[in-house]
Image (cartoon, helix red, strand yellow):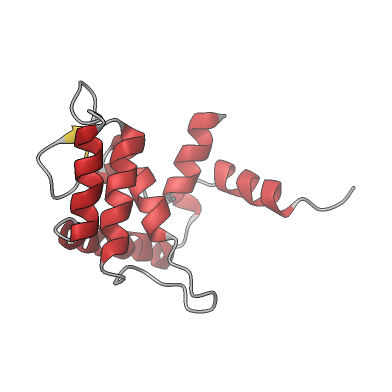
Length: 137
């Protein structure tokens, strides 16, 4: 049977528990979450973020019971739209986390998804991917 790297990774993430991670990994996740929130809050003031917020308001996608936080804004939106707005804000300054070997910055995709699901406190050191994978299963 051929190897399936994507499903292997998904299985690893879905079965991983936070207490299985070494202390230094949990500390790094905490640091990256705080960094993400700071960059997102500052990015929420940029023109690109204002355009995203205007779009959501025009679509009447803000408000409603159980809606998720849009960082730096008084309004709330359904989780997927809040994740979009928070992702736009996080990208705005280009000061977010970077994985140097690949020149990627996955936090701007992973963290908005995590924080809009249940709020920033829900981003456990096990990682947002773990929790998201468990909810789908």
